[in-house]
Image (cartoon, rainbow, N blue to C red; front, side, top):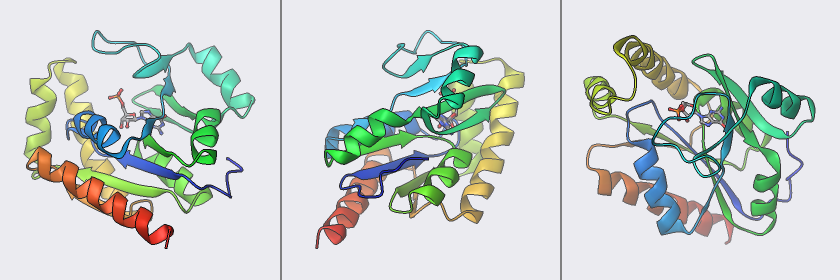
Length: 197
Ligand code: 5GP
């Protein structure tokens, strides 16, 4: 874990189940808060909509394991059989320079980060109804039906795990996209103002 105890920036964790609109929300929150985005490392195959180095840093399993061994990762998790992890150095650099660093990570990762960096601010995005997730997962037509069903089950488990954990400061329902974005931006600004008082 990081030694960024004297953090002056903000570590902002954004999590939510697959299909909840997390990526769209995160992109807009980054713009509105002038935040940095933590580019995760992953062993999952790159899809047509991914840009290497921008959305993820795609690596082999051997490369990923050597980053774990070198303690280069702030946290990591195995999701759907693939490794995902947050490179430590960019986080330390952003926080030391007072910036907001956004980690778009799963619940296991969020719990891990929050335990070690309790000042991190956790946002969990919820769907208005579970059925909405299944529809959205199918609509993006990125995977075949068996993967979609796996992601849907994980999504439901993830919501339960998130609610039972202490990792999240706020739960935001993505019903109307603009409202969800505004709620996150306002809540983060309020938390920042409180810290700086
Ligand atoms: P996807 O493959 O759909 O982009 O991401 C799958 C899941 O992995 C999502 O829940 C996403 O938030 C999570 N994830 C992405 N990067 C990281 C990371 O660095 N660490 C952890 N723990 N989860 C991640």
